[in-house]
Image 1 (cartoon, each protein chain N blue to C red):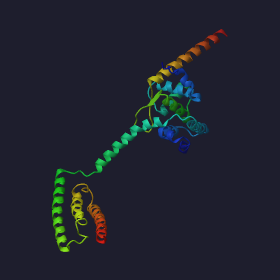
Image 2: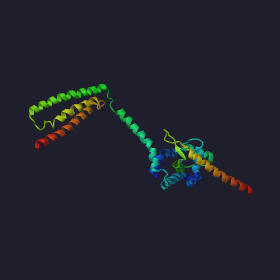
Image 3: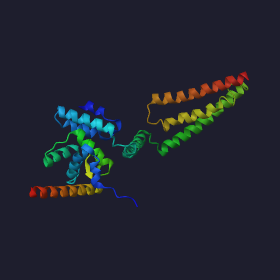
Image 4: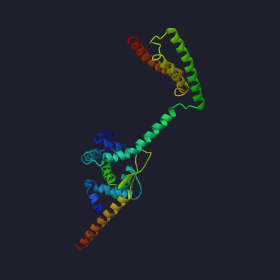
Length: 173
Length: 111
């Protein structure tokens, strides 16, 4: 009998489908029941009682519930960042930035303006890398070491690739 | 001035669902019920067991006109209750039926 529900319009199924099937399940299968359900389906198509507006207002509440559920789900999955984590992330970002800036300056002196290492190419990486690495203590805190490594190296790899293309173009101009 | 809706005519507009709709309103006048409870109650009161197609056809019409409304439920089946408008429509309908019944009895008595 469940398949007979498909005879009804979609909107009708959404509105009454579940409770209708509950009721059908309590009835003894008979020709009279099949005829009644089929006649009901024909009627539902010929004179639909459920307007889109009615259905929309009925579903509005469900959507609100769904939105709240998603919000809670996201909150549950998000890393809980404590003030100590934030301090650690800031310290790591600043320290790495200072260290990498020093490394960049040394490379610049050694290469004497090679376009692959100049301000436009390598410097952005110097500021991106500490920030990406510090995510280990914030957004990536709850993830495994493998995931952290993959995310950070992937992000820096993409930035490096973009910078390499920029350096390549600079060298040609 | 806005014309008052003729509640006694509203159930007539239900066509073949007019009688099932009346039985549903009578059933819900006793308190909220879900589909199965309604069919059982109607079978006990009127000796007529409504099929699911007929019951929900009538219920959809009653709900569309604001005569009944679903109640919140955690279960799959929704209980329905009669609204103030539904009660008014039921009273009007029963009064009309009573008037017809009185006339019928009077005529039978004369025969």
